Amino acid sequence: MRFFHYHLVTSRLRQTEARYLGRLGFRLVARYGRVGEEQASFEAGVPWDELDRRGFKLRLTELERGAVNVVVQPGHWELPRVDHLGLALDEDEFSRLLVDAGRRGLKVQEHLGRRTFITTDAGFRLEVHPPRDWLEDLFAGENELRLAELQLRTDEPAEKAKALHDLLGVERHGNSVEIADTVVSFVPGGPQGRPELHGEIFSPPVSG
Image (cartoon, rainbow, N blue to C red; front, side):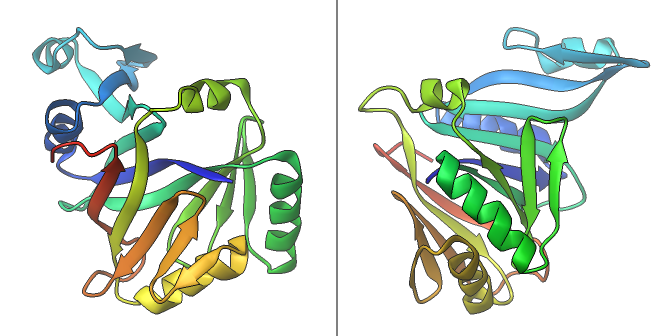
């Protein structure tokens, strides 16, 4: 099991995107949305002023560096909130997790046969994947950037950590859980429902 992805929702999308591209050194995979009634995507090299002239309506931005994939989606919250976390599993882990989620009465959704989502008791979803070639490519290289710790602010940190611990069967230390080489820490003082992004620690370290 590996942690590779998180999906953020914020009203400050361009500022959030700029932080990952500028301060954290991520690359723009693409911006996805619509021009008129047609779906459209634009890779790096097409600036926002050009997209605005074309009447582009953004649905989400995808960013990547090393073994970390981040998606930013327009939403109501100024401080980014987490919609879901992405996990890469082996075949046995994937099958066991879906069976266990069903036994717990958690909602499991398949999206176009490519992505599977589990609605947790922690205010956000998990996006889970069995082995895939593109994930192997993402994890290739011994020195790739990885997410060492994701810090999320919430109203119930202990309950959020317990929900992940119970579902995934991972190590828990107080308000933190260990998902392979990534620690997900819940800190107090946040909102109900989807937790806010409080901080990230990357390895090797990057500025920001």
